[in-house]
Amino acid sequence: MQIGVIRETKTPEDRRVPLTPSQCMELKSRFPDLEIRVQPSRHRCFSDKEYTEKGIAVTEDMTACSVLMGVKEVKIETLMEGKTYLFFSHTAKKQPYNRKLLQAVVRKKIRLIDYEYLTREDRTRVVAFGRWAGVVGAYNGLRALGHWSGRYALIPAHHCRDLLQVKKELEKVDAGEVRIAVTGGGRVAGGAAEILRAAGIRETDPADYLERTFGHAVFTRLDPWHYTRYGENRPFDFDHFVSHPEQYRNNFIPYARRTDLYMACHFWDPRSPVLLTQKDFQDPGIPIRIIADISCDIHGPIASTIRASTIEDPFYGYDPVTGKETDPFKPGAVTVMAVDNLPGELPRDASADFGQALMKHVVPELAGTNGSGMLERATIARGGSLTPHFAYLQDYLEGT
Image (cartoon, rainbow, N blue to C red; front, side, top):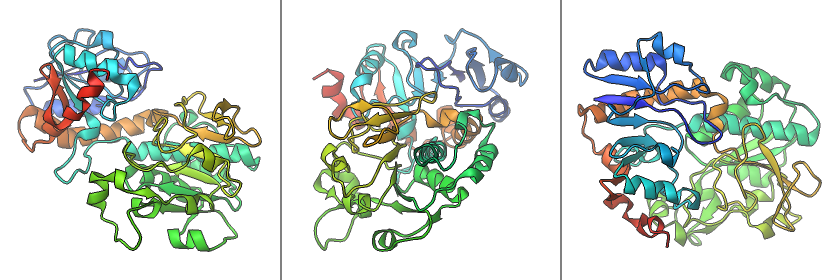
């Protein structure tokens, strides 16, 4: 088997890699018949030289590679016919902006394996940048809070060398009595909570968050059974919620009325309830003026997320009256942070974690030494058509 680590082609170019130089070398020692090639890149967080120093071939030519690995979406014109690709395609939720990408994948008879759907049989993911999205997203949220309140100033995360320097920056945080709600229970929310604790912000349970006042900054973490309801006096069944989210209604508003800064870290199914509408933002009883939408579902559960922002320019404003974009930190506006490649701000740390999970769970499957069915569950298209798991995308694929 030959694996190619492809150059990131999405604009702006992501600096992360699926496998670090050391991990490539380790894989070659584990699998003596494995060959790894890396496309050259000027933007990658690990230089071409770092790969060649580990004995990894750096070459433009990927034709001999049967498996090609990247991170973000691949430019259509660079897709190679008949190959197996692994990357985050952002197509399985029928994202309109990536329909042409999926159409090209099918047309070129590519096998597309999406990292997001590499799961164990219990549906838990095995590879993800989630922790790092939570870490950087929460840091950006606190950075916005400092600017909005005028109490402190943090440098951008991508100006920090690593997580240690990020946490050193957090010593500057003076959050006052801010109240922060975090939705989600996975890696992303865990990363956000890690940063909030490092900033000295105390955690409280959802019940106390609703009922008590505090003389210091607090945050609470909300699971689906907090921010949605199935029916009065009915116990929450998580498996049922995953299968039938359209049967649940929004229960986030009571928490929104007690929140200044909201950090969205949950996975959102398009069938799930919307959490904050434009009308909700017009309600004077909802004090939220900063949203760190770490999940970044555009036109999804949060009305203020009208576009993705960028690492270089992470904040924009949302006018609740017009529903249009305005300047961030403007009186009456909601300031939004919706960067869609947050782990790219700490790319070396994030890549090392991600690559370790690939080495442990995915490469053995690709090499045929394990056969759990994981790759099949994550394969969106193969041989010119959608797989049965993703047959629901047919209308999206056809543009209808």
